[in-house]
Amino acid sequence: MTMKANTRQVDGVTIVDLSGRITLGEGSVILRDTVRDLVGKGSKKILLNLGEVNYIDSSGIGELVSAFTSVRNQGGELKLLNLTKKVHDLLQITKLYTVFDVKDDETAAIKSFK
Amino acid sequence: MKTSHMVGKRVSLTLDSTLDSVNSAEESATRFASGAGFDEDEIARISMAVREATVNAVLHGNAYDPAKKVGLVLERTRDSMVITITDQGQGLDPGKIPDPLAPENLLKQSGRGIFLIRAFMDEVQIRMLHPGTEIKLIKHVPGVAGDSKEASQ
Image 1 (cartoon, each protein chain N blue to C red):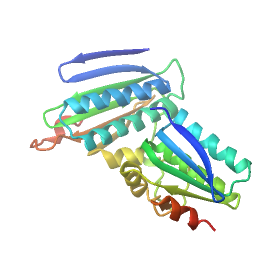
Image 2: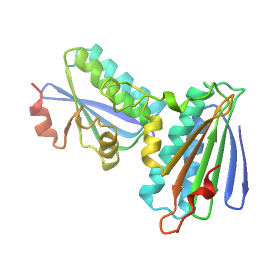
Image 3: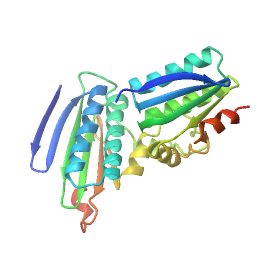
């Protein structure tokens, strides 16, 4: 399944609805370009909705980490929303679950941004 | 280009050093693991381990060199599924693989492939071929009293 990224704005937070596979190649590139574009436009509150992401490999995990650090380096915040079990387990195994701010409710996630 | 041979419970493929080969290897592993009787979760783990190992072979081993090939062998032994992936690159020294869980590596973009492979498989053997690298991934079939040495070299 091809990776897709749709962006919307809610109360000053940019929500990126991702679906498909975030893997080496197209999926990772779409994620990288989307976040780079948002950072370039000055977005500092970014919420990645991974509810429809059914597969992620080590390259995809790397892109999530890279997105997290690039937004943070610009003084912003990047949070994750609606992890599927597979993605949740991978972040646990790689000890990244506690690095990311992970949310499971969109409204609460939006309010959590400073 | 992909060439394949299937003899009994053994499938052997020779793959080009491309991203398409990564997907082919993953799909072959999924089919083979399904046929070997693993459950859905184990099939997903095996397939991901094969994907990660093939990415390493294509990307870090052969560096997309069209003259270099990736070998993939899927075998069903009495008690295990054994997957052997080889490349023709510089060679990966297993003693020099950084720990991705170390605090200084946690936020690095890469370096988690071998770690995930080890997390998902029962046994992982890495051997330098001079040139190239061979990685052998072993998953025991549940409920089969085992002699895992059958799969080892």
